[in-house]
Image (cartoon, rainbow, N blue to C red; front, side, top):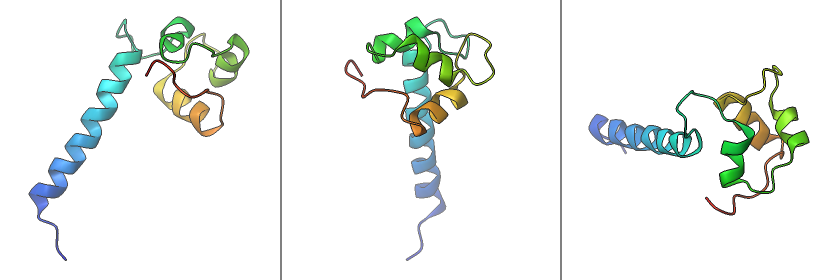
Length: 82
């Protein structure tokens, strides 16, 4: 079965916009990175040590890529306020 190009493009847009809204919901200051305080709004039980392990380049903030890696590694608890 062929999927029309429009339907594929619409699905891709929906996936991309969902990620952007989740990112902006966490990144409240809009700097493109997540502070410990920003992540604790969604993950109130996130420990400072887990946050530091997610901060792979040790610059004091977590990028969206580091965030996804932290999720994959199980460093984030289930979101309670999300």
